[in-house]
Image (tube, rainbow, N blue to C red; front, side, top):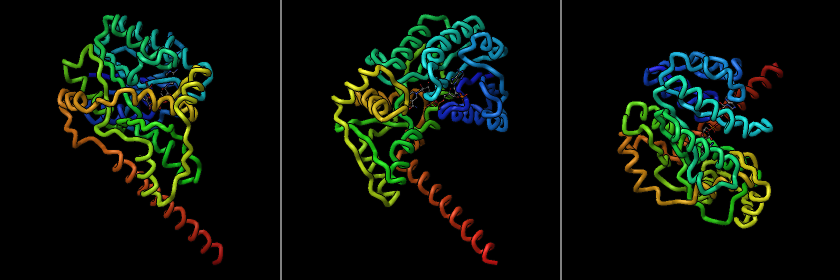
Length: 319
Ligand SMILES: NC(=O)c1ccc[n+]([C@@H]2O[C@H](COP(=O)([O-])OP(=O)(O)OC[C@H]3O[C@@H](n4cnc5c(N)ncnc54)[C@H](OP(=O)(O)O)[C@@H]3O)[C@@H](O)[C@H]2O)c1
């Protein structure tokens, strides 16, 4: 089976690529910038040029492809790209995929999208879900929660750099996941016929409130966090007022994202069912404490290495 992965340079996309290669799939990635994607080529991926905002570039990428995995989304730093990528681009992609009679299309959406029509990205994701369901393409939709990877920037780095961490005053409980594990579910779905034309709510096994994540980082960093609280009411007002939303774009948007992900906390029963369907043993799933522990160990090792190099340089100067 040959896969086309879109968004292979992204946080989740690169993990999907790794999983697919590990499982022996032939992988092609549609990329906008060959230099930026060169690491994928080193992994053994075939790179083809394509840009969702240039629909004519899409059909050539689909030649000889069995399944498409779309892990792309607009980059927050690219002005005006939200609608062009997440709506127009993806709509063109769906049309091209249908015309090419692709056997499976995997799309990543977010938890509770239908309840946040006032947030553009959520509205667009829901619209694409609907388009897919109305198409003849055999699809699988994963509605995702937050990624562990995003928590480094939100909690670990501010603590290490003695910067404030913004949280709401609500105890929002979010079952974050490692993108490696999301990728596992995604690639596994290709081999499970029951996952065709289904929507799965993917989330981790344990919910975390921000105070728990902060304590964990404080322990590992050996430093106290500077916590700033924003009442949820003010946050809602700000989000509604600006009507704009991008992952991790700024503090108010990030906190609005926390609200989206925390709307339903009754994950546990359905989550265990889901792990059964995908034949994934919950004990294989990377826990947030282990993820952070590994991050801090790697970071401390790097700091020690830099320190060692500085001492060596100073010694050489003295000689
Ligand atoms: N991050 C989260 O917490 C979260 C939560 C729920 C759902 N999701 C969803 O999960 C998926 C992956 O998210 P992520 O955080 O891994 O994304 P990401 O790191 O921001 O990566 C975005 C990817 O999309 C590509 N891309 C952007 N514009 C493109 C275009 N015009 N044509 C082709 N490719 C384009 C980027 O390529 P370049 O390298 O060229 O920029 C990059 O590979 C998305 O659908 C996202 O909405 C994310």
